[in-house]
Length: 252
Image (cartoon, rainbow, N blue to C red):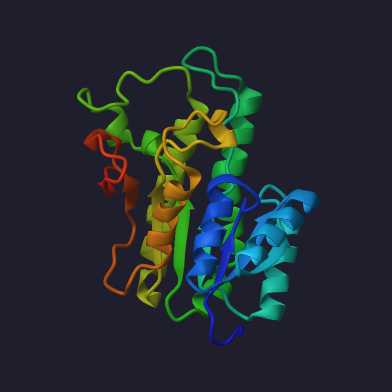
């Protein structure tokens, strides 16, 4: 099975967009490694995915714990010898402090999970990704991390206030994506950032206007790009279009 199925890893896969991403990749016929921090939730997610026919393996992985990440990479090395798809989905939105009100502790934690965690996981799995014939890396970002979007006076986010850490962390994720895309391009790999849109998840108290599955379909698209697909872009839901099913490339 390891030789014929594509192997995909999704971090933060026990709920929300991460769970739906694992589900959709599995329904595409991939073997899915569902990364989790909480053992109980990981087991519950694995059970639910198996009941839908997904070939899934729960994988203990805390993106902020380098030893946990190395252990997870060693397990994938031993069991599969490669990794075809990596979806860096794990993320937080803490503090919600606007200009002049930022909680530095919450800001550091947000950056640690969203940015440092993405780099830590990607670096740990680089050798395994290089062994894939067509590696795909998807870094879950956000339209609010787009400097072009946030500074567009005619755009829907120009008047957004009350948060600094989350948008700043996703802007950093976009830069990380661009750098890895350039580095891995000669191997035929594609590294892109995903904008799932404003989805109802625990991250926002389930106030989003899109479903977690709709957001996960953005990740699915980027994880299954053909050889002539884009590399090094921010792609996903276009809030400015006013259509819940409008997608395309966004400005960095």
